[in-house]
Image 1 (cartoon, rainbow, N blue to C red):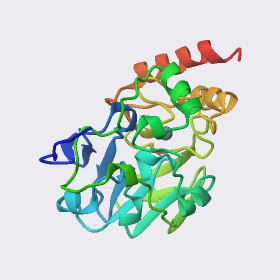
Image 2: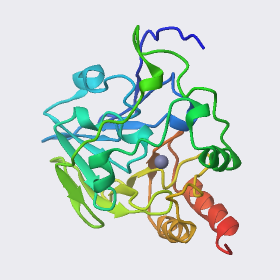
Image 3: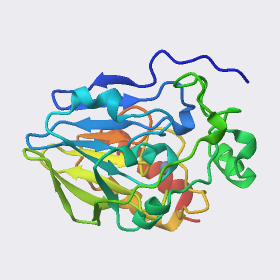
Length: 258
Ligand SMILES: [Zn+2]
């Protein structure tokens, strides 16, 4: 396979006065994570950091007002690839040890992935392409050598902890199911939820080796009750309460008897 060199690795879109969405257009939808920049009065917050195929920080630092805290919703490769680039790194308590080692089960090449994991992802509704990128970030990039760099958290958080960025305050929600330590950020003042991979408007993955369907059902029951205005998810477009409730309901209908 020969790849062209991408003109730009990251794209961005301003969502409102404070929030910018950043994504990697040359990454397969399976690994194309939403990276959320939230501007705060004292510090900025970055929810997830993408694949780590290209350096994220230099590409987006023009957005940062007064420093930035990088937050990981969970430790899957597509969410924490560039976490190590940031000085301040928040990881959930249940997956902090994984981040210190870095989870490198995934290759960019389908043929090098665990066939059972490929099957479970494809059964869930994704079609994984031969390679998870369709362009190179720079000349000479070795896609075969892709790996996630370990990143020791500088702060470890759990359910109920508060993350303040000055004028905005978020509460950590433990949302297990997709992965055991998945966490979200809930801002009660605005009804904003950063949900990571606990809820997004695409094929949900609950059959990965580390997933747990019973936990996922409890997470969905909890999310259904949350008075959200908007959900900024780990993948796919943002959505409102109605869609969240329908998503949770569909999931529970499918899995509650499991
Ligand atoms: Zn994930």
